[in-house]
Image 1 (cartoon, rainbow, N blue to C red):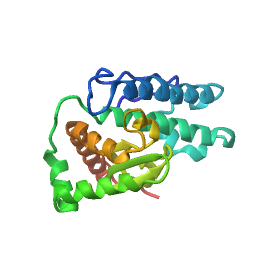
Image 2 (image 1 turned 90 degrees about the vertical axis):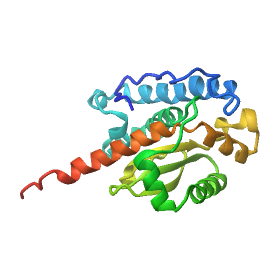
Image 3 (image 1 turned 180 degrees about the vertical axis):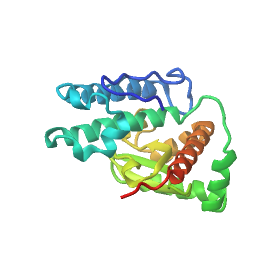
Length: 221
């Protein structure tokens, strides 16, 4: 992910709006990116604007150190920084070109879920049952163990010490234009659009970061 700070920009999609057809329709992609993500980006800039002391904070820090922000902007930053962060991961996590689960992520997934079918069923059922609006995450802990994590609204796995590997946007605006209330059809389509190469990159990055942190010498008293 590109490291950004104030003023945050609406990053372009890594593909055209119609590139995921027929899995994700053009109209949904256009409004999801150019309207919904733009709104989160503009709201985040508007709230942060009067607070120059936080202008060099990237998205991750705004989320992880949210409680250090003034109380008057804390919730607004949480919602909108999360909205920008989550959407960027979601859009980058799809590809118009078929990809396959491979590498270290495949090994970890098969270790933690026994087989692809078990993972798919667990992820599918949890996505189907997530109440209201939110995201379903595949995330890795500090040891590289994978977990499926449902979170409401624009919450992220970061405060739980987890590294996001893959995320599925389950807000209705992500699928309602094409699938109406048939969330299951959207989940099936999304699985076919997953960019497993990007997921593998994120997983390897998480492993590297955790290894670097664990190898740092302990500080003295």
